[in-house]
Length: 110
Image 1 (cartoon, one colour):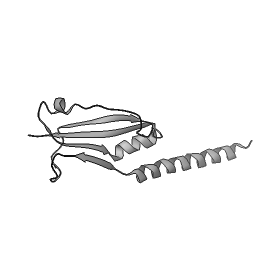
Image 2 (cartoon, helix red, strand yellow):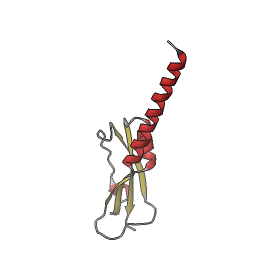
Image 3 (tube, one colour):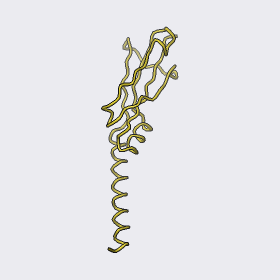
Image 4 (spheres, helix red, strand yellow):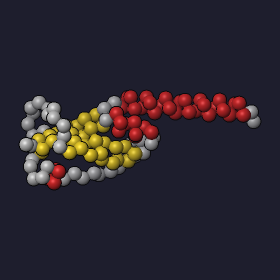
């Protein structure tokens, strides 16, 4: 077998795999789910709590639990967001979507 052909074949496979991962990441984009008790404007100050939730197998497996009462030290939550950020999607693409992190943010009432 010609080693030059092997190297070219590996290059093509690597190129297409990298292109697929990049396209998948760009097509998924960012996604945000926002929960608020009232339909007023979004809060612009930094969140009081932010953590990465761990999901697996394209985000289908995993059941993270966040106790808002504990996070806000007894105060009610003013806003909760579940966000797929670009960094989360890049990590998911690099693991072929076997690991799929999601960022959770909580704003507490002042």
